[in-house]
Image (tube, rainbow, N blue to C red; front, side):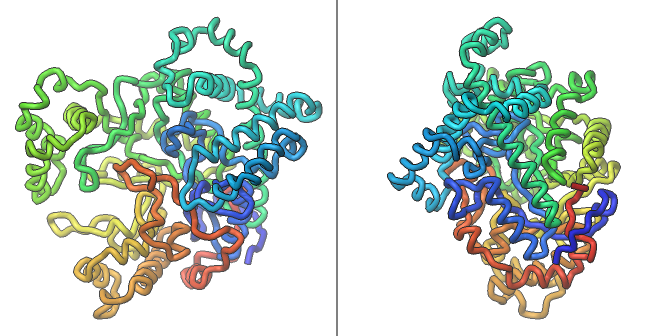
Amino acid sequence: MNTGVKLSASQLLTQRSAGVLAPLFSLRSERNHGIGDIRDLYALVDWAEANELSFIQLLPLSPLNPEFPYPYSAYSAFGLDLSVIALDDVPEIRDAGAAQGILSEAADKGDLEALRNAGRLDYARVDALKRRVLWEAYLYFERTADAGRKDFSAYRAGERTWLNEFALFSALKERFGWRVPWQDWPGPLREHDPAALDEFATENASLIGFYAYTQWIARRQWQALQSYAHGRGVSLMGDLPIYVGGDSADVWARRDLFDQEAQGGAPPDYFNWLGQNWSSPLYDWERMREDGFSWWKDRVRHHAQCFDGLRFDHFRGVSEYWCIPRRPAILDEIDRETEIPRVAKEYQKVCWFWPIKFKFQFRERMSEEEWSRLSENQRLGVLQQIGANWVKGPGAPFMQAMLEVSQSEQGTLWVVEDLGADMEKVYELRDQLGLPGMRVVQFFGYDDHGRANPHVDPARYPENSMAMSDSHDLPPLRAWVEGLTEDQRRPITHVYQMSRGSEKLPGAEFEFAILERLFSSPSRWVVVSLQTVLGLNADDRINTPGTVGPGNWTWRMPEHLEALRVSSWLPELIEKTSRNPALKKSPLKSA
């Protein structure tokens, strides 16, 4: 059980431990309003402690556009999404008759029950309800909160480097519509004209104040959660995406730091032969270097204050990044309808790293018949990929500056997402900085020459790594196991030294054999998803990369948090593999 002993950051970074990956929005409870919130994390912390888990890994929690709620493309690199606020814990909601009236009406009409019981997250409806309630709470606060006003003013002053622009941008988005990008706003507001912005701010002072208020409320609730979690020896690990959305407060206010003529993404690969375009503007790294990466330092400092550890998404972008032009030169050079052979030839050059057998399949992909099936946007995407190329990233000087900032915040653990093909340069940078990378058992595989990739055998994982059963972009482990044929299972049984005939085991038994190997690995940290702990299947996947649809980022756990019990296997496996030493059960950094 929890010893309650607090360790220094240097001690904690040497501890073998285990954690759970749990999207906050997926948490279902009897009291929330259709989406997981900060109050739900108290229950998850209790459950983690009971299961001998040392940390909870969360997905990004930055503010989301309610029309496009994609966690890795937030409309601000700072702050917390409005949805994380637990309405029960906002004093003004308890006291404001109008706020209570909205909640009572939602309950009487059955809307609240429908949101709570929905199989999938309906973010737009949840956001609309919480936004209305919080607006009434803010109006009540404006009229009555003499005591709280001093704390609120101090918060606004302390966070002014990002909060002022964020609140102003949010108010502008609400006035012009969340679906309308800032690039389509009236000229003076689009171009950040001071006189036009002053006039708007004067006319919309309450709306701007509302967005500052909700950040203040969210931050206060989060700080209380941190104290609670640390008291129970459970750490909170955040997720830091490398890019921000193009329609964001950051790009609008600091466009000098961004290259808006290019976008981030990934080249074509096994999972998506059309490649990926994330529509995120790239950074002007030279400009950022000139001012000592100050914007990034503020961002890392902000996250380090909220989390004990950070998963740094797409670490490859620090070493080198895939630069996709918005308008590639080839777009003006060819007739997209008649020059298919040239397009295919040029596109295949982009895919130089593909195995030979896949390149033969690719010829069929780029036939005239296949081309005719592509939408206009997909054809544009192909041409953009032809014009894309790898560009050297900011490298070690940038990361060293970020590590210095996070160390000043009592020592934040960094784990870098270093997954992908042709990663030698990325591994070199990771090891140069001494940063832990990631290993994922589902990436078990060999190249054309029979060489094992770094994920094949957990027994060979490096100590300075985080070993994972799955991720937000993969199916739960049970689903992956049950999707393997006996022929696909056989190499796993050989590497894992399982008994003869183990490839015929039922899914649950084969899955547990993998989990035993994973937890026994030298990796300092092991992470299993909430779905895997609960034994869930393919329908409980969080996201499928390269796809767009209602199945992505809407998963909700099938049972209430109140019904969660101690796992039948997890605490025992943690003890068996020495992932709960006597002095563990403390946050990754001092409280």
